[in-house]
Image 1 (tube, helix red, strand yellow):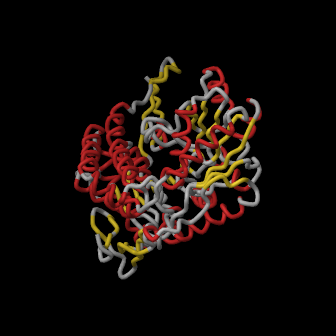
Image 2 (image 1 turned 30 degrees about the horizontal axis):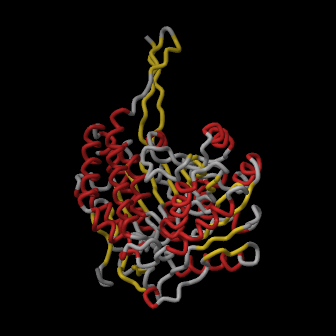
Image 3 (image 1 turned 90 degrees about the vertical axis):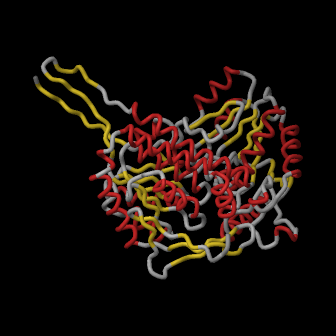
Length: 480
């Protein structure tokens, strides 16, 4: 793969380049460009929305669910066929280790498989409300859906939003992040190869303030999905409100691993470490807070620190434990959080940019563990989006709940305990969208509804709930 390779937009089933407008895609392991990408703007968004509308109204909404399912199954098969190529591309584009990129490609294929399997069971209901009237409901597509996806999981998040939308009978316009657009473009190409009608999935790369803004504010969109920061989410939400659009927002988190005194630490510690170093901590559901009962505090911190010291850094394509941060801008942001936290907490391990010739030029930072972090400190409250773990001690159940719920976010939490009663009690009290007990995450969790509360957003993706998200109910009443 060389810097001369150019990636174009996909609009109406055709590759499109908007004149001479392009941007360079940077390899975060080297800081050097390795691809050129079409830089789309309002004109291309207009064309993509028009193509989606035409295909939705004239072709896709009239396609039987069984036929939609067959095409989605074929997209899944092609994603599996090209798994290694996609993983390599995603790894170079984002910096994530190759094994993680492979998991993302597998999850992407699973999304299309899952929604291909479920769409034929998206039934309406009959309502026996009136003796002389037959009342029933149907679920129908919105029409054209817009999808603005981030750079941390471009292939997986594109698939998790586009697959249920297409399954429900919508057509889609997908705007990948400018920092990592390549696998989303490849997804568009594979969808066409699978037989998806031209215009059903349009992929329009570009900058957020240009293509992203044009899509979020477009009056031809019927539903909008956005994954990203709360700040940009507010802008997207306001734009959707102006057009009276339903919108699904997934806006990040400050998710805790809560370790009770009776936890199995041999199981908990490896999972705690993986939950913060996965994708260099650049994960909305990263386990960025560690809440530990005082009785096991020293043991847990020591064990996590030892594992942090053993983490191998490197370019994603070399399949290390920890890859680089996505960009220089984000790298500087993470370093800023670390420097400020040095004066507010105890730095146990990490916190440095590696002095290693192998990593020179890349956006690397060591896995970093802070201890004795105040619950109201900046590093406890704000999403760092890097491999930085903040540890806080608690003494009892109520204190653990108060600290866990004491941020603006509410996406994921994990509870580590041998007491099933305490597990259920904590799960009930935690204000989050997902709670995991004696595990963290669900290996992709395609089947499990996903989304947050508070400033982590609203709406649900994944699982059967996503089909409800991308369809709407129509009620029909027939008087005898």
